[in-house]
Length: 82
Image 1 (cartoon, rainbow, N blue to C red):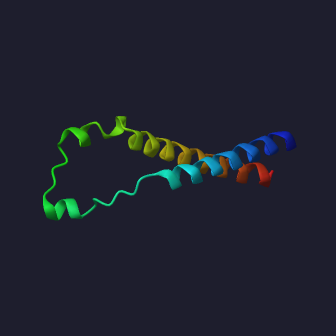
Image 2 (cartoon, rainbow, N blue to C red; image 1 turned 30 degrees about the vertical axis):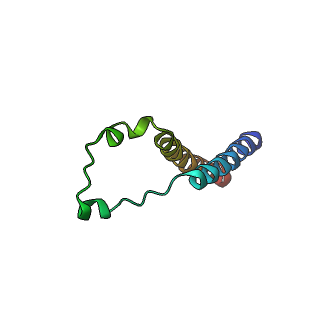
């Protein structure tokens, strides 16, 4: 059980580092409520294909890494209780 705990802990540390890097290089989304006031349309070509851009891929990777972070945190808490 000790070996599994150490392997999961190393993976957890690597996921933490990747999550920090992804969150740091992510572009700041400042459009928020100002789009509502100015009437900017979200139905343009860029908004429809936003997931295919570099920023969209980084955002998706950040979300996946965040979910993996939570799953590993729960797994580690279970492993350290045993």
